[in-house]
Image 1 (spheres, rainbow, N blue to C red):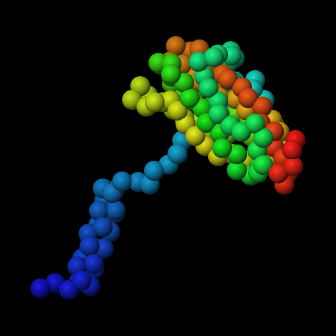
Image 2: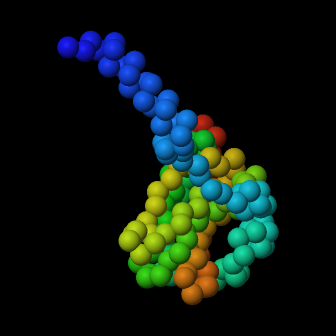
Length: 152
């Protein structure tokens, strides 16, 4: 009968052999556009992503507090019921990096996402949907950030 120690030793040897042959999967890596996350303005962001200028739409919704008492953790959400969404984004206008979240969407995914972002000051927050046909739609909401819970 094998002891636990012997089994673990053989398992480690097999794992080492498989890794050496390249048969184990590599670590998952997130692909992201550095230029998009470095963009400071909406024009720079659209240029970095290669999309058209967004137009306002009632079909895109943005959720978030009117007044955020803690700018370090502001809950935001974006959603749409439109078919053919290829990408959803959440933007905060006055953040050092305007692009806060970017989600690639397929038809198998409901385009509804919730995130928590850091906001340094009161700003407009936008939910942007890039459609499969090239249209870019957005919704906007102002979120006021207060310090210490004082009204803003």
